[in-house]
Image 1 (tube, one colour):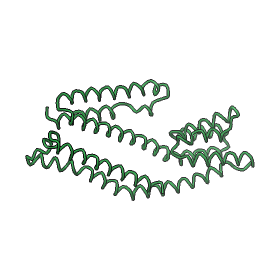
Image 2 (spheres, helix red, strand yellow):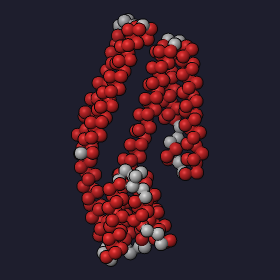
Image 3 (tube, helix red, strand yellow):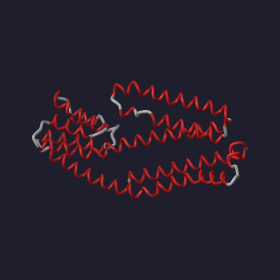
Image 4 (cartoon, rainbow, N blue to C red):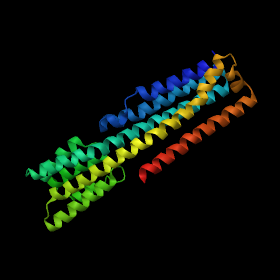
Length: 267
């Protein structure tokens, strides 16, 4: 088996293993505790087995390159899943606040209002709202329940502001619905601004990905013309040095671009 087909085999197996299994974060807590370690071990075991097969078939250089590609692909997929979950929590926060305001203005008890808002929320925000609903029944501090999820939430400022509103309204007798409604208006404005920033950053991100893929396109064009670039890159010391340097520079460019995009989103 040629090195390129062996590397493609391992990369395809890694993608199938990483993508095909159910995400533990989408499962219930009991199932997550059981499936999470098993899924992680299953992934590592099959990738390691495929790496050993590739090492025997194509040599150490192709095995190392494919292993690095599989590791990088796994990290990228995990980061993408984490970003999607955080984005879903931010998107559902405004709707959760709207439900909370509507329930409070309708005269529903605080526990019922928070449970209704938790139904449309996701992530740590939903956990915090359910905890507030339980605290209203058992006499616990709602603000403490909200602040307990600040470190894990994608909307920590919202949780802090909601906890402060709860404390102030409880101490002064002010309308909690009015305070939460103002929070919702501010959150909607921030969300509109974030969507505008994401639209402006979509172009630079696509350009960075395209530039990162161009070396691979060049290799395919050279192979199509009969130049056999993989033979040089995988079986000669000069090719190893060129391939390692190119991969490092490509990875550094993607990392730097992601840092710039993250800094622009935080600004």
